[in-house]
Length: 238
Image (cartoon, rainbow, N blue to C red; front, side, top):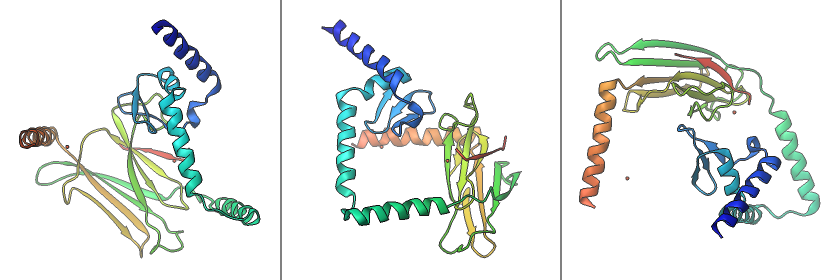
């Protein structure tokens, strides 16, 4: 029976490989370790074939059914004429959101005068934003294994993404090293009058990283004793 089950899973995997486009799967994510995660079921998989076999299983299919039911329940109930108008309005709104190119930007490197900590500062200019009071740039970090522009992915780097409509998202390639998140070490500012966004970050030195790791280990020990954007523009910052 075990061999039959193994053969069944292998057939499902081969069928899925032929019929499913993983690039369009919203639940597949490759993490920084090179393994695959199912964001729907919160499971880990060693390769694409293993993930595809998982998508044909009961747990994943049940999750898809639950998600579809939730979306159907939360969707507004509109008359057919209103639904057509709603879809048309949504399509028109999407069509009018035309990207106007990348923002101007400046990147500067420095070191802290007191502790010689490495620092990067980013300043981006958004002069064409109509209403700066209601619009603010957003940022996030992305691992080399999430992005699909640089191939093959280089684990020595991570990416800082900064986005603000209607401009294109800009991604800066920076060293994949721990970032100091203490107060005053990671600062963002949106100047609404000048329409300029600045972000300043500091990297943790090896000694600081070791101290922070030791602090996390001590915290975990004490706790256990007492009871834890396709249209992206890449700009390298080595």
